[in-house]
Length: 125
Image (cartoon, rainbow, N blue to C red; front, side):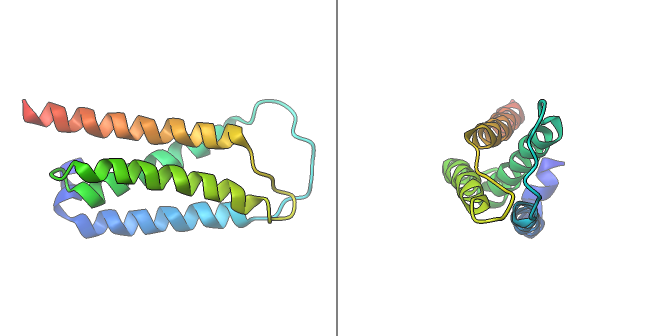
């Protein structure tokens, strides 16, 4: 499946821009300030998943499975987008920025990085 997205690179770019748009849209939604009670499992799953997908498709779009130098750039871009997305939320009524969210985003980004590197190493065998 990854080789399909590497071969048809433009599809990976479409997914990158769609994911960036989805992240921006959901972080722009306003909420009534309500006290948060309990562990935010849905939010954690969202942050892990969406930033893992963002970084994964960005790595594929930039490297095409060949130029691994671009993988580090994809990692940095994804992490900075997570940081600035949280910063953006400070301007939205009912939203706030949280280092926990950035931490979870980073775990998702690292997960996709490790997964892609393992796939590339596995293909070399």
